[in-house]
Structures are given as C-alpha cells and as structure tokens.
Image (cartoon, rainbow, N blue to C red; front, side, top):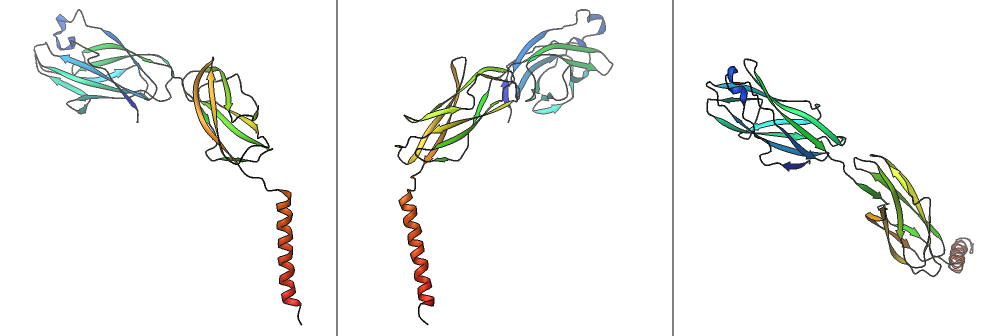
Length: 268
C-alpha cells in the first residue's frame, strides 16, 4: 500500500475563470511546492470560488505529469472530472497524486487546469519534488548453516540498493563468537546504483575447541563509518563423528551381517 501524505489546505485558488471576461485581466497564477517520496500518495486541497454572475461548469485536469502519476479529483468523497458552481458558491476539491515507486528524484512542475464550457481557462502552477530515498538491504540464508569444529563454513551475503540514489563507500563486517576467524571475498568499500545487488561471501574458520550448538552471528552494513543496517545469521555447529565411532559402526554392521548369513546357511 502506498504511503499517504496529507497536506492541509495546500492550495487556495480564486477561480478567475468564473469572472466575466472583461474583469479577467489579472488572472491568478499561484505556485506551491510539494515534496514526496517514490511510492507515496500526496493529497492537495483546492478551494474554488465562483465570484462571477452566472453558473459555471469547468473541467478539472492536470497538465505536465506523465500517465504513471495516477491522479484523481475528489469532491464530496466522489471522483469527479468537472465541477459546477452557482454565483457565490465555493467548493473544496481534493487532488490525489500517486507518485510511481520507480519515479526518479527531481522536480516535476505541473498545473491544475480548469476549462469552462465556453473555452475559458484558468490554472494554478504546482511543483512536485520527488526526494531521494536511501535504503540498503542485507540478504543472508534463511536457514541455519551447518559447520564442524576445526572446519570452515561459508555464508553467502547479498547487499541491494533499494533506494533511489547511488550509494558509495559501503562496507561489510561480520560479528562472530570469540576466536573464530573470517575471510571475506570482499568486504568493500563498494558502490551500488539504484536496483543493483552485490554478492559476497564470508568464510568462517571454526575452532577445534568449539562446542556444539547454534552460534549467532551479526552481519553489519556500514557507510562512511556509520552503521546503516544489521542482519542476524546463525551457524549450527555439530558434534563431529570420530574415526573410532565410524570403525565401531562398521564392525557392528559387519558382525550383524555375518550373524544373518550364519543363521541362514550355517545349518543344512
């Protein structure tokens, strides 16, 4: 669901197109600036007033935005495309703009335009500023990684830039239990453009003396010496099966097989 930004009475417009043509020499043209994030929904409140001498019906539309900026005019909780006002009447109309999730950061000038049935036009200039967002995400395996004392285990790690601006000077670090050693395929620094993913891995060297059990790890992503995000991971250190245990198992299996053969063929 998109975020919604409620902007209380952002726009106030005296609709000069409702004034007789002779009095329209000073057509109003006010501009306002609104900020939003990609994927956010913005609501602008417009106030229209007919200070003319006759009933006016005007078509409402925006000009300057691409179709992927979904928009609608709401009057009395109902979507409308036109508005009708008698002399002296006023109306509050809400303009809803849905900023595309993929919208690039920058300034988007547009106009709210009204056109009467006889072709008279009036507009108000707006400026929508889409701000940059910063979002770096860490990806680690969802299941536990297994390892043995005295052996190594490898954790794959992904870093994805889900923001709207390039990110630089990104570094990885991994917090492990004491006496564990680590070796990174690369821990940075590296840069990511919006939508890009980098895949790295960390090899863990588990001490021979490590006891069995779940060992918690923490992957930390930092940028310019500031921690951006952390992600938990885990290694399941298992009890190694000794050589004597393996030999004992083989001997037991062999004796069981001989016993079965003896019972079947020993007596004839």
